[in-house]
Amino acid sequence: HRLHDPRQCRPTVAATKGAIDIMLPEPLTLDWWTIIIAGVSTLAIFSFLYRENAFYRFFEHLYIGIATGVGLMATVKTFLWPEVLKPLLGFDLQPYPDGSLPEPYNYLYLLYLLPIAFGSLYYCILSRRHNWLAQLVIGFMLGVGGGLAFKGTFNEMLPQLVDSFRPLYLPGNSYQTICNIVFTFTLLTALSYFFFTFKRRPGGTMEYSAAAGRWLMMGCFGAFFGTTIMARMALLVERLQFLIDQWVPALSGWIIG
Image (cartoon, rainbow, N blue to C red; front, side, top):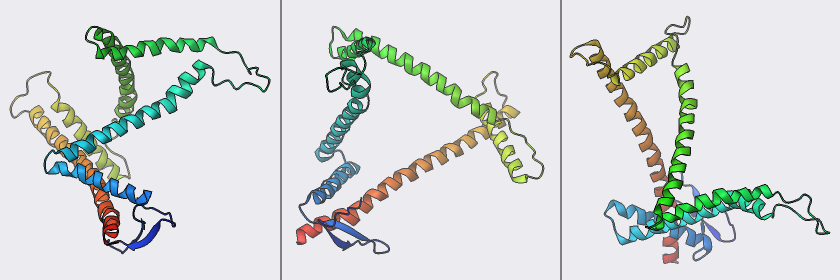
């Protein structure tokens, strides 16, 4: 991350391809401490590649604590306060200079207390005697989540099912014709791998079809895995560039003076 405060920065040529100029902050400033702490945190996480150690565990717990705190504050700031607590307490009504309100308080907002009280039962999981009350909340959440997921599955699968009906021959478009044939062959062979209605005969058509489907699925899974690795490598390269281009020059500049 590049810093652009001209009052606290001095130009430094980074040892990267193309000799890109990176503005580094003056030592012991806030921006300098940000770079140093970020670099130490990165090295602490990388130390797990050697073995688990107290240095790594400290920064792991620190990250989890910060993420939990930020998530809690974001939930309160973006949802609980403006959508629940503010209308419930009547703070969304701006009074006129004479003290009157533009509209009367809507007492239906008091119904918010019911889901708040029900959701608070989740904290009963900390009690051995009353932890069964938390199971009511967990069951309700699982039911709602399952229903929404079931609905989302149909919304996602039906368009794919309709799109799978493709013509095998398109006059004047040989490329799309080949693509449709490969798609249909892959679809049918992959489905045949999960066809267990009757026993497959060794050397039969279904046996060869299932084997082809298995190989095609392995190729697909390999492509997905390779894409995931490339995304993770991009994150690794970004961290290494940060250490080389910013952290090392900032730290060495302070040591050398």
